[in-house]
Length: 275
Image (tube, rainbow, N blue to C red; front, top):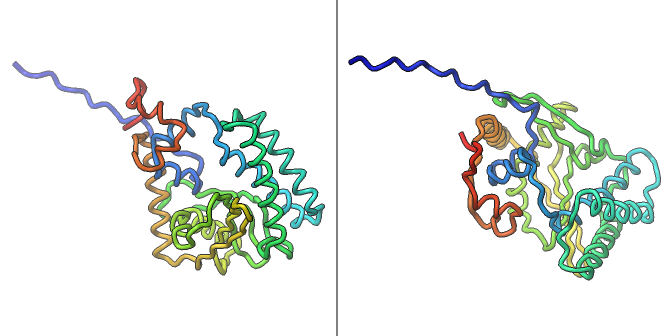
């Protein structure tokens, strides 16, 4: 008896995203299943106090840098006012925030005001007009099937891309540069694509919420070809995994503070989340 011939099934067409950002790539490579819950399914989850405070601090920094860029009001009072407004708005629109109690909320608010004041008093706040603030950029790269896209917090007057981080403890400079390599090198590629010039350095500025606030800059040299190729390969890996729907748990220390632990424990769900 002759077995029936199986008809070949054409693979489903692959839909490429419009672009890949360094934050999306890092999120996918850190844990592809969390990426799926957070960025594909967009599951609701309580906002952590640290994330909420970081967003409010970022809003204050953005307002200050935009004022320096455009010649507007860059006073400490303006910065504090923007922070206060955003702190409340984010609670209302993106909450609930998982505060332990009202005392924790008050402390977080005061920490934000203190660390922003420390930034203004530090040598890291720009005194000259920046080249760009929160400007979206994109760049086509060899070996990457979609454009690289990103929004850089600040590009200084001499062309240095700067990303700001809020932190609870003083960072280790070498580890910080390594942890944020995808972001830093991506920003270099975006700046080079937009200006044709290589930035003199790639900077992270940490606003550390210790009892006495600290503002710490971590500078890395511009990436050479090997570092660029390494990052482009990581971006490519993220794009391929997202397109092919490879979403699976990647257990590690990060699981202890992940807001999707219960969802992860139910993996694999009835709906397809992996290729």
